[in-house]
Image (cartoon, rainbow, N blue to C red; front, side):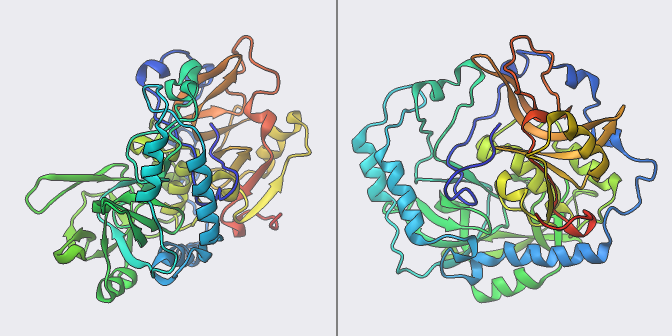
Length: 446
């Protein structure tokens, strides 16, 4: 359930999980999933349309969001992400030295790894080119589509363990700005940076952006996608791709302006008219009713660490949620909890934390963090804090009891499991609550 990473954790998502299969998800029943309604709308307050935040303040947050969103177009290095080319090279060098296994459990050949290294050459002297994603795509550590795993056990996913593909960084949404820093030797891949991640994408995932395109794209009014997996069809009516909730796109006269690859690999725009309710002006007014609707769009989504198979992990779920309301969050859970204002709970007793969360938490606006995992506070049910989160599972003797999807639970998920290790509940590891919109948190930054 870990959504956090060590060195370069802001950008490099070194591990990722394939989503849980239906058979895995059915392997164990959790009391919380029967006890708590699996809908954000079930936790609405008495006045569900009262604003959680002042819309004027939301607009200020949204302006900051767009500055981060478009940062790749206006920077020649990775300094806006907080690291250097040298750190990228050192990270990649560590990858090439390790032993890995393919999905069938066989050792990945050293010769093949050296070929990958040669194909992935990046020249730091080459100036990046502005680009934009024209389809959804995986962002990979190396230019290789197939998965690599640290061990045979990791490749098999035995005992409820995550099947960890070490090459899966993240994903990129259609319409997301990027900068292309390099092309692979075989020309099949581009090394890119977005507003939050770096890595290799298939060359067909992005198109280059010229000054006129960037001017129109950057300064048009923007909309945000509210329907998860919004189905996009082309001018001929044929299916093109799905767009995830939280995609931010320019709009004109009720139509979304979607980028496509034009002549010479350059980006051009075409108009797509979404169905009613699939998109709205960015940012969406932040009320409990609108917040619950966003939660419900993601409810039940299979777990995918780093965006594996097009699914979210814990940090992606809360990031896309807050995007709808104009708030930029970093990509990993550790940095997300440092955004805005926070109340540290590391030195409190587990028995005290529920009460603190109940008294200090703002439903639909508070994040609850533990090392490697982050959750959205929904409010109280019979006096007990409940959270929305996309989680892999509960630690048990010999592995994990798999949840594997986005759910509503208490902070004592899995308490009924026999033989569960001591201090393995969510409440035992919580170290902070935070308010990404600091002005509604009522506390100063930690």
